[in-house]
Length: 305
Image (cartoon, rainbow, N blue to C red):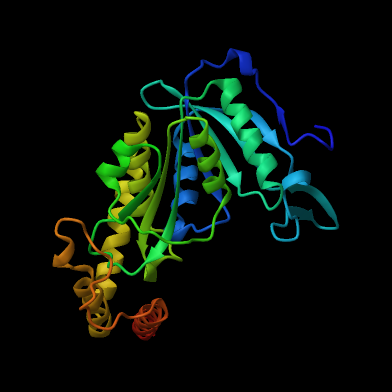
């Protein structure tokens, strides 16, 4: 790859079947509940894939904000592992192929990057673009993961989008890519998953499972999900144990539950009711969880003695 190139092919583009859907999983923006990270890791762990092309770190990456991993042995560096931004060819459980744009969100040259991706989708004749990210939201974990949908897939917007705000938000590069590809008439769907704000920093399998279900619906692809379901059950069991043993946590989550209900919107679920009681902050709930865990650890230590 030359200094001026933004990406270089590794695989043979002419050998790829035209009309494959593209999925984008870029990290660096909001990834509440580790949604995008878990979704990507899940695909790489369970499905066959091969590298098609890589993007230039020197053109797109701020090394000081995402420092490469260096491997040190005794008195010298043996290797290093820089972040990767690339396109892969995957095969789903039913034998259908798809494209995955995966890696970090570029720090620089957003226009050049998005135009490059548009050119790649044209070269490969990609049929659609589907992407996702997750944001913290004041909803309780006792409810299903909420979703809002953007793009030009009106069937998906009508089916899934529960919250349709008119607002101004910080953009990410996939917003820009969605905007450009929609302008070219490519079917695009962007899923924003609404994660309980007090669980935003945790690795919540339920949000990754929801992403799997949404992307499967948007693309017709078949993804494995059993492992996410099992880890999700374990996650909820531990969380419910913490809540059941702590009255303050029950009160805080009860307030969230009360604020979640809003009869004025009918069947359209509302994140916050105008008449809801005072909403606890993520810090409040995190403090309660931390206090509970400390009490549990003290009890275990006393039992050991």
